[in-house]
Length: 134
Image (tube, rainbow, N blue to C red; front, side, top):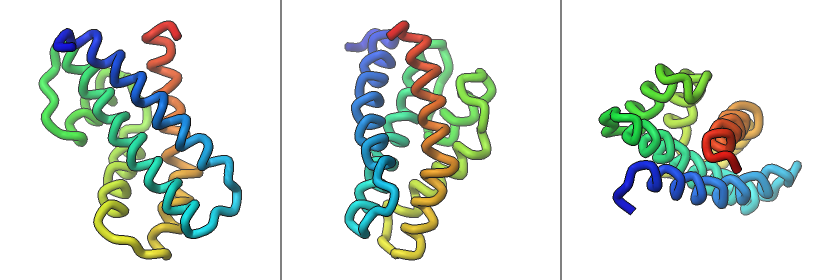
């Protein structure tokens, strides 16, 4: 478990499970308030595991990463992700939704998840599918 190579692969396995939940929530075109809250929760979970996946992979490559922002910046510099600004925006919105619930904010975040953030996570998944050979 302490082998960094194994760690990022295990993290990717966790990411896959969270991503599948997010993907199923994305299929609901007109969610109820509860379904929207579930979509946002699945996004938060998938995003959290996603940046930790980047962190674990980068640490296996020899980088020292001590925050989500640092993981995103280094992943962009290392060309693991291509949309660095969008990832930072997703990080900020993830932080926004975890502290309070406001329906107006929830609707805005839902739109951003559907239009901007889900494609980022899908791209991350595709990158690591290639790296694991799954």
